Structures are given as C-alpha cells and as structure tokens.
Amino acid sequence: MRNIHVRMATILVLVLAAAGCSNEAELAKARTEAAAAKAEAARARVEAEKAQAELAKLKDELAKKPVLKNQPAPEETPLAKQFLELKALYQKSAVNLQEWSKLKKKTIDTIPAKASPQEAATLGKRLIDLKDAYTQSAINLQEWSQAKAKVIGQAPVKNAPLNQELLDLKEAYSVSAVSLQEWTRAKAELTERLKGN
Image (tube, rainbow, N blue to C red; front, side, top):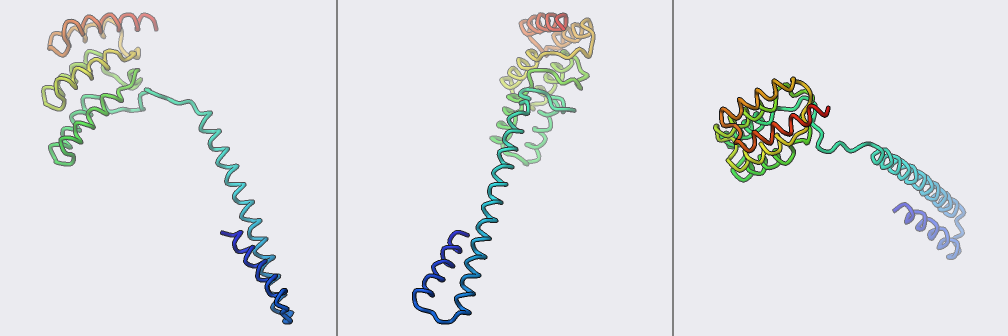
C-alpha cells in the first residue's frame, strides 16, 4: 500500500515535468511529497523487518519450551467431582445431552498418565469416588469402565504407603468399585510402580 504512494508521487513529479509545468512551487511540492512517501516506505520496511525478527524469536522460544503432554495440572479437581459438575451443568440445561456426552468424553480422554502430586486420595479412594459418580448417573457404564482403566493405569505418586494403597484397593473391590480382574491388575501395577520408585 505504501509503495503505491511512492509510485504515485514519483509519477506525479514525472507527469508534471513532462507536461512542462512551469510552476516551480508545484514541482517542489511534488518532489517533497515523493521524498516523504519514500521515507515512509523505508520506515515501513524497517518496522516489517523488526516484526519478522520478533516473530522468529518468539517461534524459537516456543520451540525450546518443553511440551508437557499428559501432565497433571496443579490443583486439579478430582475426576469424580468433574463428572458430577458436568452432570449439574446438564441438569441446569447449561449444556444439552450431546454436549454433555462430548464433555465427559473429553474429560476421560484428558486423564493424565501420571496421578497429580497434589492428589491426596489413594487409588482405591479415587476408584470408589468414580463408582459414586456412576451410581449418581454422572457417567454411564462404558464411561465408568474407560475412566477406571485410565485411573488404574496412572503412574502413582508416593503420597500414601503401599499398605494403605493396597487396603484402599481392597475396600474398592469390597464395595464393587472394581471387578476382580481390575482389582488384580491394579494391585500388580501399583505394587510394581511403588516398589520401583
């Protein structure tokens, strides 16, 4: 756009000179405008180069930052509570059935691979809480199964001693929060991971 102004001013000077314009004041004015347009175009080029350099710098900084995929966010809301909050939104007609289902799926898909360091509840307690969300119809059977599988597969944080973790897992099995197969898998994974840390 600015190059057009420079070209127009230059053309104006050439046209006036070619037409034999005898008015020196008009020629001087046209030359001044052409010079100002050229200076403005030069400033615009410098600004554009600075902006490109800043953009390249920001892209480099972004590329150098480590990507934290599947890492828990600080002070996360417990998973069962998230499902209950989504159900409350649905009951208040803040979201429709389709949106509620998508939000639940997204919540399940974003369960981190590692339990949050702020998570005070043991694996067994989290599984019992998930069962409560299921019994309150915040999630359906399929969603409950998917969420349990992801929670059981999470790498634990050493917040509770192994014996407490195992006792709470037994309680989860006793209240039917997990099946025999899930209980066995959870015990094996938990024991292996906590002893390996």
